[in-house]
Amino acid sequence: MAIKISLKYKLIIFIYLILLIPFFASIFYIWRQTDQGLSQIEKNWINDILASENKLQDKYNNLLLKNVLDYSTWDEIYDNASSKDPAWFKKNVTDWVPNNYNVDWILAVDGQNNLISQYNPPSEYSANFNKTSFIQKALAGESSSGFLFTSHGLFRIAYAPILRTGGIGPINGVLMYGQLINPISLLEIKNIIKGDINFILPNQTVISTNDQSAEYKNALLEQIPDIKNNLEQNNIITAVKGNLLYLFTPLLDIESKPIGTLALTLELTNFIQIRKQLIYVFFAVIFLSFILVLLAVPFFIKTIANPLRQLISAMEFKEDNLPAKVMIKTGDELEQVADNFNRMVDKLKTSRQEIDLKNQELKLKVTEMEKFNKLSIDRELKMIELKNEITELKK
Image (cartoon, rainbow, N blue to C red; front, side, top):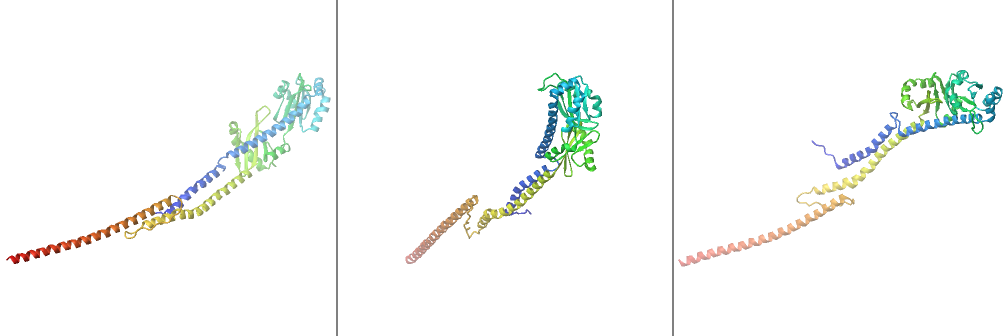
């Protein structure tokens, strides 16, 4: 047996189906925001963070390079590089600069790549400085800055050829500064990007702005084997653990060679807050959907279901009772249907009245015919009787 569903419930089902569209749209949107894949907003945010970190590192590299250039283009340094006066260099450069600037390592060589003076260089560079490629590049006129990994740790270095004031040659040597990278030197960058900076070096040393608890350090190191191959193909690797987002990118030295991994750890507070807001929006949509249904159902019942019920009730009439007119004022197609129905009722009433009149006329004519027939029959009978009487008289 087929189940009949009233129009009212059909309308309710239809409304719910319409309202399911924003419902499923919200579910899809929230799914896009989960850890199954970073949204475009999150990717842009990550790129902005990395761009900010790179920009700040470049800023510090350029500041160190500017400091080197200020000294390497000083006439007194140029002249004393020619005279190879270690005492003058020790007094005015290798002793004075570290005491007044954030410099941890200084090398000064002459134009023939001979050591003039040095301050606290890593052991491998104090003996073999003249074999390093960047010293050779500086003697060729190049100046640059960047990272350098040594046995003493990770340094930010800058080198420049020794020239006269105004950059006038010929080149008379090389001046190089080095700054040891430590957590304190990274605090400004940490405060700007709102996350921890971690340099993971080949010897498993971790230079971090975090307190470097064993758990935190191990959490970083244990991810290196998994991302090592991927970092060779991708510039950025992301991972989520707990409420932390890890961003891994290759750490390149001053010659653009990989010397480790730069890892940024960012709290997912912002992401979590965004997702909470999305969940609130999601439930708000559901709540509003039910409210809209509750508000819409009475409206549709009043404007559609009730008028249709009146029409259906009016159409269910017996042969001896004509349908009554319906009063529907909805201003839409239902009102037009009701008007057509009322016109049909008027026509039916008019037709019935005409039929009644015709029936009355027909009854009158039938009555007259019956009277006429009766008179005719009576006359015929009388004629027959008269003929019979005449016949009897003739006899």
